[in-house]
Length: 484
Image (tube, rainbow, N blue to C red; front, side, top):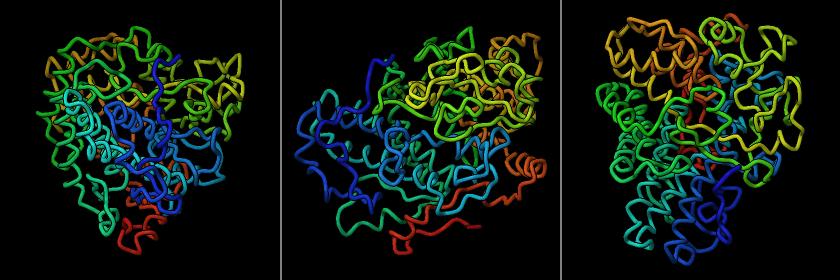
């Protein structure tokens, strides 16, 4: 199913991590010395591929001890979808159920794992940049741009989820460990993200979908511009229009093919997995099921009734691809995610086996063309209540047409765009960030909390706590977010 594998290290698997007790310390006190590992161009390339491996993470079915293996993006639905009105855990047991009730604390192991995983991406990228001169001169610019794209991608995740975070852009030497625990204001973190992505845009081409590309950098940079405290709408609009103008990407006519015909024409950037390979597979797809219990837990993405209602009203042909009631077995409060069923298995008739479900090859879709089209509308709207711009309406209509909602629209309101993004990108970990950008996080989540009987705290909804483990390692230098 997969044509490449991210994990190519034969000797230095942990070349930028240290002992288990100090994960965020990148000093090589228990690993192969860096200068002896990065000796050739192929070594540097292997190191670049290793950055993707950090994003990919380790499947829970391979290594169940969360203290010994990072999950990469495989827990991301907990930190994003669950903290919106989209989905919830099927049970109230365990730390994974804390996200949807907004009661995550600093000792939450899944949040800690995600924080560590993103810093592992960053440290691997920094080490590549530190030894970039080892690579062939003809490859140095592209390797560096790729590493900076991935560093920016990880920091973009961190700054939106945790706020001010340590900004580390080079390997940390003995005596400099304070840099690992000094929180830097969001604005400065965003400055570095923008610089890294701008370089990636200027250097990379569009020859890859499972690795960094120019279009991926443009798309992520557009979202960064939209996410700034003072958004740069015109810059985001231009980036989206550049991607559209290339003609390299298109909406798949069949919405199902977006998710089960991988690296298709709609995909701009995806993190790949390989089915049946314990070292290269993922387990999150299986965890979304509940009735069939394909995963280790009992349903980590149960669809909330208000999202089901939006699908009924606005989903069109996307609805049966996105959610399932198991042929009428489940009521409106129990629908399950159908968008990422392990290997496309039809759980309504043939439940995926434990082996298939827990070692799935479904890719994690980081950016696709429909997202770019809808960002184009958002950028053109420029924070206003609506737009009648012809190009923006064309982008909006293209997404709706694919869903079978072909009635022409004369204008697009903010509310129209929010619900369109909700049903188009459901379960792709976008809703939380969308609510922040549109300034609707408190309004939507406080109402959702009232409906569900949760106790809503705006501070805890906006930022996750800095992991207590990192605060302890810092000796108190690393400070905590308000409300925790």
